[in-house]
Image 1 (tube, rainbow, N blue to C red):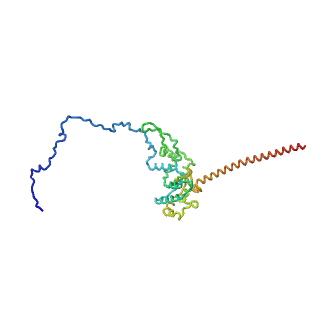
Image 2: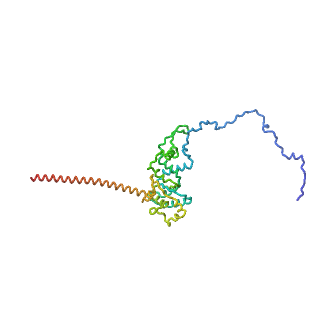
Image 3: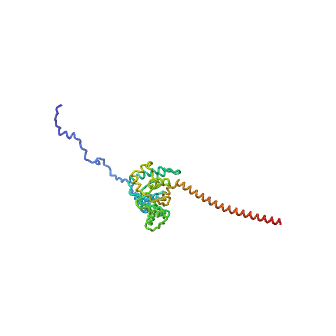
Length: 347
């Protein structure tokens, strides 16, 4: 290793090695002197330049997508009410059950067995797979379902008077707010609850409202199919010999403790079929129709034909008896006339 050489840098060389600093004179001072020029500020388009009155909506403007409602439209109860009214208007067959504290696992087991039973149904002339896939078993809120029944049966949207509101352009237009969450529908349901609007005893609401007590669940079918109804009754409310439960060999999962515990907590209380209220026996009668509605229609046609044939036979019999009486009387008169002529000729 070579020896290190120590030396000192002269102080005079430090100023030469260090870079010189930039002058502190501002850059503006370095520019050549020019005459003073006044520059006009730039003009930008701002919101203030536009007339605010032209963008302001009228005070009574109502957006078409958010009509006025008697209840908050975004609340869960309001959406449930709309679902129930739509369900009552579009579903021809509804069974009402009372349930007693079924757990989520028990509900899943009951729906599984119901789905299996409906999938095995095949009815000629109908789309059985579509009916089975659209069948539902759901828990409902009793008080909201009661309000939905009142609106569906007693509320007439065509009787609601139009309301004058302003459009976005400020023009006055006539708009009818007659949806299920409107004030008019709310007043009808409230009037029935207070007794201001009479409820006929023959109405659907008067017949089915006593059944809507306690925790409720409904089973719905998109069509009146006695075969599918019988399959559902054999699972949800079996009653042999008409609606026997599936055998253990055919469906062993039906007899699992979870499914049996869930089914034992369900009780059928009634139903609504084609705007008619049925008790338990009536529901079983609909499910016991052999051959479905087509067979029932064929029986009705045969009965009408037999009644018409009997009426025709009765009318024809009366005409025939009258004709025979007149013919016999004519023959008697002819014989009497012929007998009188022969007596004159012999004398």
